[in-house]
View 1 (tube, rainbow, N blue to C red):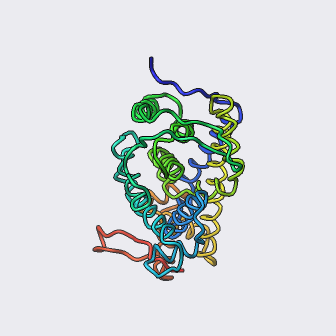
View 2: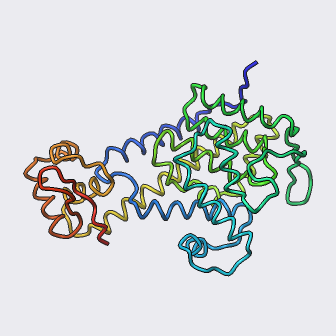
View 3: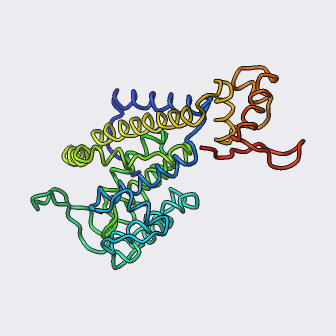
Length: 329
């Protein structure tokens, strides 16, 4: 019999999905484009810091940033190793297949290198989840069932007709339920949900969902506990779609504020063209004029304005060269 997780797509989930879809559509078609390059880096660092902080890492965001930049930081050796490993694991996401168990093991090997006895291997002992008072609240499946359970879960995600946002949330819960590793299940589960979401839209590669989870950490664990008690993950699904929606709203607002701050003093058409070139959406002046909804002469004037102001430059020859973002702050 095929493996089928138990959950219900409620009205709340459907409403969140509709809002998420609307934001992604507006982002892809709007004059502001996608998240600015330096905001992507900031969001990635926020994600790493938050995911590790959820697991008890005490390093600050500034310290995490310093470690990634190669600067010396005084702190617990294991916590510094956690930062370096997480950065390396997230950095290889483009090479990972979210439906490949071997890639999952590879990611765990990098994430937990030097932190556990057998990184990149499923657990070989029973695992119990305890609450803050030491009470056993959940016993994970027998270690002999782990590999098959992961196979079944990945196959369901790959073949199910549910939207990928729903499937990624269900994967996240079921992965924590299986608890396949000796340690690192939380950070790998959150990373793998990001990987699944990024297959749907690249925006999710840079979306700091982990930061929002950390902001609602108590509710996160309560949603897992409630789903455990009900033997189905509807509560967790509702929680996670809300987290994804709030993360998108916050990130897009930051991107718009950043663009408006950087381009203060420019006309709206100039700002629109600036964002298209900055975010890689610009192909030629005709395509840009049609997207923004202005004439070609008008956009040629904007192009000259941006060039003269030092926002953009042309790489290559006059006829076949491409306009690139100059990175002016």
